[in-house]
Image (cartoon, rainbow, N blue to C red; front, side, top):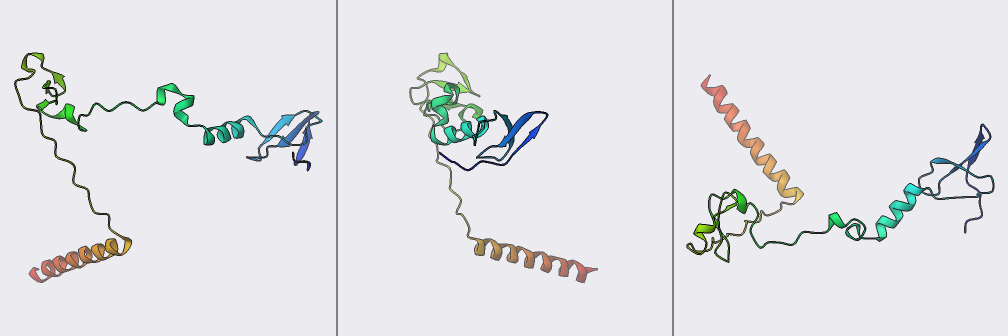
Amino acid sequence: MENEERHSYIENGQRYLQCKGCYDYRSVDDNIVSFTCSRCTIIRTLKHTPLEDMIPSLKKKKSTGRPAGWHFMNEFVDKDGTVFHRGKEQPELKGTLKPTKVKPRKKKKKLSQDEKLYKRIKDYKKKQKIKKRQNKKK
């Protein structure tokens, strides 16, 4: 326990004391030496407790195995043969078509800061050349 007293003041007969975490003033009893406010206590508990355990609605959804944006495709056939047109199931067409082949997204190469700078310089030089050409034409 902490024995040193926090900064406090008395206003209209009520004592106010600083919180140990956020240093906000809160009204307390006369015999309190230091305290942690409810907001800091909640923040501290949330750091150590997974949010999904506290709030059931935040639990992760199970994947359906379908690719992202499948419901926007004109026609999508699932692995089990279910046919979808624009995200709406077509039960009369089930099993009549082959499953849709999904191509994985191409991952873009991340540029370093130097590479970004060189790219910007290159683009700037191109713009300058175009401006010079336009000025010569005039």
